[in-house]
Length: 262
Image (tube, rainbow, N blue to C red; front, side, top):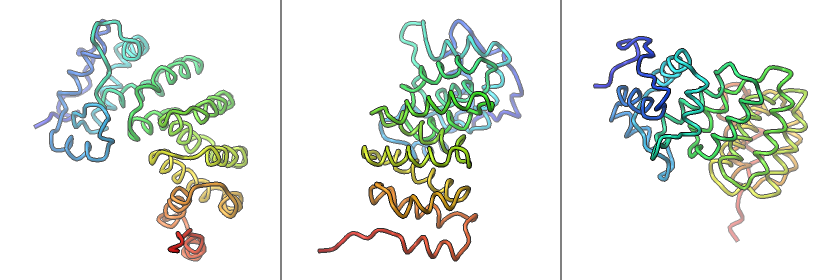
């Protein structure tokens, strides 16, 4: 049976700054749960990296220990490995790196550089969303993040786009940015949302904008270039939300696009 964080306690003695990836792999393996790994693996794309089956509480504790032992050089070792044949090729290790990027006390420029180095390692919704939920810019950093989001959204790479969408969801669904957020969604729609994970992220984003900025979002839902699948997923997520009243849900359901059977 895998050890729990409470059984092990806070202990940074495992951290090896000369071999960050190897030491992180060994630490996370000590928490591995094969049963949970089987379940978790089924939620991920078939081509995603190795899964140990580590609960997020254990990953978070591991990150705290890495920060205590020297977080920035540890992260640099994960993102820019120098040890031969050393790769951050396990899912929980990538999630840990995502949390480190957000939690380390570094300049915002360094944080954005770390995100850029990390983007090629994002290969699933959970790694993407772990990164995005950890990025919490200060007010004076939001403009820089907004520009960075634009770069992600114009990329042709699937998970670059997903990162851009989810960063908007986590940081820019407010009265100041709502117009620009919806403009960027429309631009993405016009270029074509080809991948399921980007479609799902966009639907999730539109659900959040509808809940927090309903008038602007309703106007967008009434006239947009979204493909039918993404549009209907957005409606479904709105109707599944406990934060939307029943009368509004009935109105939203009537907007569903139905394919012609001719």
